[in-house]
Length: 325
Image (cartoon, rainbow, N blue to C red; front, top):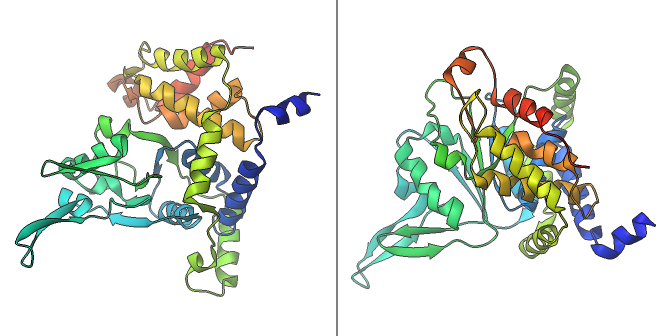
């Protein structure tokens, strides 16, 4: 009876099929990173920007490129370096001798899926070029505003901040990322499988074997479906309470903003839909809490010295709050 009622509310057949296709497509090349793949898909469905962090060589860039290849949309890649200028990202006005006027030449930010590789290797001036684009889906150059085409998604990779030649991203920019996804070392079994796959690979370019799964119109349709999913008022309060507790925790110097609560609810909807449900449960919120909050909070200096991580504090906060039933 519950299943019949569930089917009558929202038809998730198309969404489930698309999610499974993307999982299988990414799983052909990305070995053992199931959580990373699920968060990538959830971020796409929830219309959010994603930040992938990990040491060099754990397939951060490859994961982002594969995700982009799964979508039949325009793709740009920007390699961030210390000498990169904002105009290299946004574009610049170029003088045309034919018309005797300046014409704006679009930069690589004009695309649907934007891969920003090693985002924390560029200084703050260049980071600021992304602020307006990520939040308002537009850019302003020389007093003129240019709208960015939907869907617009930034997939950024970064090395841990203690690596040589990296800059800590401004808090305002980190807050614009839906998730920070930690890409960890593979297990021994997974690493062996990676070597086996590489040895058996016929083509030099792994991406040639990947076919597009979703069109731009399909993405818009799936996002509209997810936006309409049901969330009980007590679960909205639960998400808000988790965020609110980050502002009153002695282990944290900086808590999360209301944008974090919105991100938690939107991404929980995506997780629920990926599980074949048209309603959100407390487990969905708990699952996305750490990826949503970890990059939005700052540890107090004392706790940082003790070796505590933001994920540890978030886990303590979730344990303390009563789960709604």
